[in-house]
Length: 220
Image (tube, rainbow, N blue to C red; front, side, top):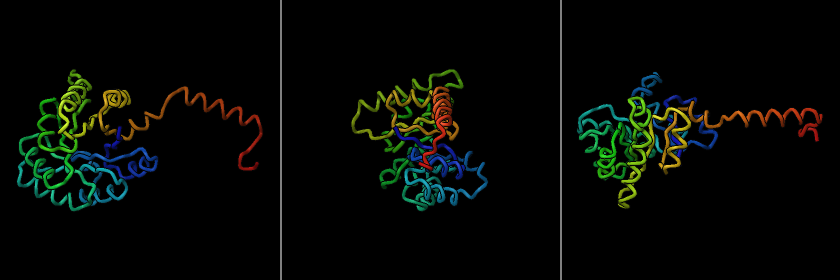
């Protein structure tokens, strides 16, 4: 499974990219607005840190303007993936960009039927929002299972399932068990994956025993 980081915080991206665990980045208008930076400059800087796909979302709602915005964003770096909403105009934009060899991330997916439409439009990634479905008492991970089942029935569909709106580490492990291609994680959730009380307890014991030995590797 690939790990993308869902943030527009450049410091967070640099820090987590240094671990070697980051395969890409996803942003959205809300995250970009919180950064307080000019959007194109922000995407350019992120692309310089992360060589994998960096999702940059259009803000227009009509096809002609989506295409104009996409042209600006695609010119920033070759690893920019244009992010479009799952609407008729968004899918039309997806088709045009994918036919031109560009990467497209179709976002705000909440049904398997929508995911099938995105795949037929040539989407590189489909982003089902599991957390937002859980919030309204629907089964977010159940949607991931449905989409994967459909995609596996048709080998000509190459769209990768990018699990979005992840709220906790269990979402990540459940998505991996199902075979999702990508999980996009808030930085906090990626760091939570490191944590386990037995790891902390074991390390504490090792360090205590080593201190009693009076040794130093650097002085050996």
